[in-house]
Image (cartoon, rainbow, N blue to C red; front, side, top):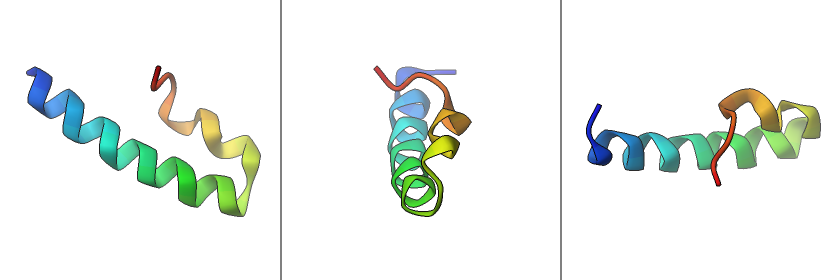
Length: 35
Protein backbone atom coordinates (compact mmCIF):
# COMPACT_ATOMS: atom_id res chain seq x y z
CA UNK A 1 0.00 0.00 0.00
CA UNK A 2 2.66 2.50 -1.01
CA UNK A 3 2.11 5.91 -2.52
CA UNK A 4 3.25 4.53 -5.86
CA UNK A 5 0.47 1.95 -5.87
CA UNK A 6 -2.08 4.59 -4.88
CA UNK A 7 -0.86 6.89 -7.64
CA UNK A 8 -1.07 4.19 -10.30
CA UNK A 9 -4.44 3.06 -8.97
CA UNK A 10 -5.68 6.65 -9.18
CA UNK A 11 -4.60 6.89 -12.82
CA UNK A 12 -6.37 3.65 -13.70
CA UNK A 13 -9.39 4.78 -11.72
CA UNK A 14 -9.42 8.12 -13.52
CA UNK A 15 -9.38 6.44 -16.93
CA UNK A 16 -12.08 4.02 -15.78
CA UNK A 17 -14.18 6.91 -14.52
CA UNK A 18 -13.84 8.77 -17.84
CA UNK A 19 -14.97 5.63 -19.66
CA UNK A 20 -17.81 5.00 -17.23
CA UNK A 21 -18.83 8.65 -17.39
CA UNK A 22 -19.11 8.38 -21.15
CA UNK A 23 -21.39 5.36 -20.77
CA UNK A 24 -23.25 6.32 -17.63
CA UNK A 25 -22.62 9.34 -15.41
CA UNK A 26 -23.89 7.52 -12.34
CA UNK A 27 -20.95 5.11 -12.47
CA UNK A 28 -18.54 7.90 -11.43
CA UNK A 29 -18.83 6.73 -7.81
CA UNK A 30 -17.40 3.35 -8.84
CA UNK A 31 -13.89 4.39 -7.81
CA UNK A 32 -14.88 6.52 -4.85
CA UNK A 33 -13.00 9.71 -4.01
CA UNK A 34 -10.19 10.88 -6.28
CA UNK A 35 -9.74 14.31 -4.70
